[in-house]
Length: 211
Image 1 (cartoon, rainbow, N blue to C red):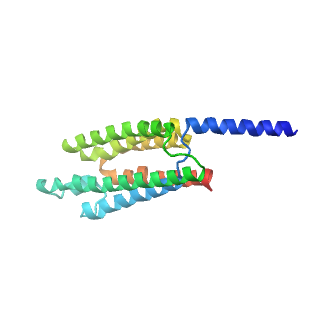
Image 2 (image 1 turned 60 degrees about the horizontal axis):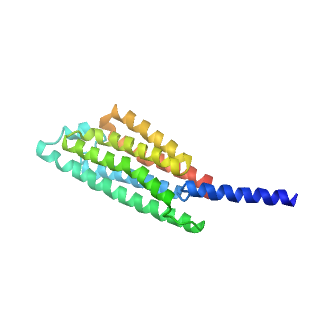
């Protein structure tokens, strides 16, 4: 009986080592919550500061502006989006490093590098595409494009971490595709895709893996 118990423990240890060598397991649900809150805060700031007339519909807002005033809008939105992105990256790194330290793992493993590459290729592509849309005055397609490419990045990265990341990516892609049909409501879809979905994902991940 004792021999069987020892064999089971050894198999469990071997399985754990193999899993850690193929998947990045230091992602934190708390990071997802903070990233979602930051995205919603960013949308609120755009709504209050950039879109001064308080309209949630981008087409309604642009209709009130002279052509000379329109040029400042994208740069204001980009500044806030970059601030949200930098904050989100810092939060994700902090909580991932903390989780790795708790479990005695290194955060910069070969698997983590593959995960980053898989995530960044669609993200960078989507960012470049968004700049092209901006210079073509197709502002209302930027949020759907960002959601779709971000979702593609998560689907790619999901191969190297928890399966929940893959499914979050699918949800982001679907949200982006739906947002294409309602381009004036970009702020709302931004808040749903980057905000509420991240918060829900983060709470679920924290309760399942960290609590």
